[in-house]
Length: 419
Image (cartoon, rainbow, N blue to C red):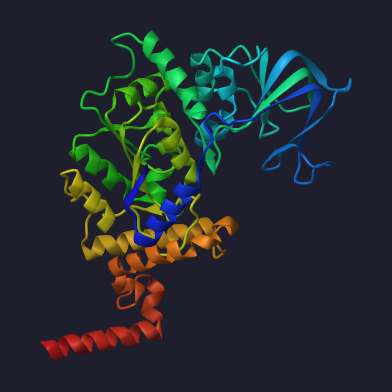
């Protein structure tokens, strides 16, 4: 079971409740076959009919076969939507492929995905290599227009926000076995010798500008003997080899953490939280792989920001320091000097305004987690209280604020009396 003891209290309670709601559907996944069927593809927020499958503004509707659509002969597996984003590719696009690994599966001539984007430009990068390594590239097809087929097999997704299964983990276990069995002694960009790996976001575009103190996180793990890996810089085969070698993996939450799907069962796995948002996808990945993850709050939240955005503030929180202590490590890489705290707070507030303006940034489906965000904000206020309570100026405009002047005058008077 995942460990939430290094999260703030309200978030730990909510995460534990979310984990408890995830149903394990191993051995209970459904498969629906359709004969002589057509797949109607529409890219609109207002489809002509209620779609059978939907994601964002991409809609796929099943209806009886016609002569208008391009025909695909034989038995076709419906793979769902092809999403050109590595994290969602792993947890959504691949979630129906489990059927191919069942002994009772029908022979499949083609696996058809519906592109989420009507301007699909073809498979590329590690998404393309995934199908190549899995031995499926010859039967994969991504469509943006209507197709018909003699027989369509529609497996249930083996992973969702609220269920998971061993069948989902088997998709990745099969690929790992193929990669390792074909790898030579010297293959890969370098085997992990110390077995401790940290997956960093610092090489991602704009990360060093928008993810404050990300370099401090990297430095902490480097100083403590971890191999720093940027997964997006590696070919998938090399990533699989490195992850398979690791005995301990630490990752920042989000897409990076989903790469634990390429790690061995039972690996020591820690997820560094960067926001109050609870990622149930990750919990499902962990269960499917037989991995017990530990979650650690490693962020401050001076004001509410978008959990799926790009502005984050990493800090040596009490929870992060407790986790580090449990591993025999001490966190010294984050400066607690008032000048450094003031600088990072100004950066965060400016970036938040620049990215989101003055509009609400809490997502509608996340309103019930308001108490988690408030908990993090109150916790952050203790670190930045000088400026949060306007005891000291933060921005130029504060020097012209009467309320700030009154507080400065009072604090100055108190200091003079104490002297």
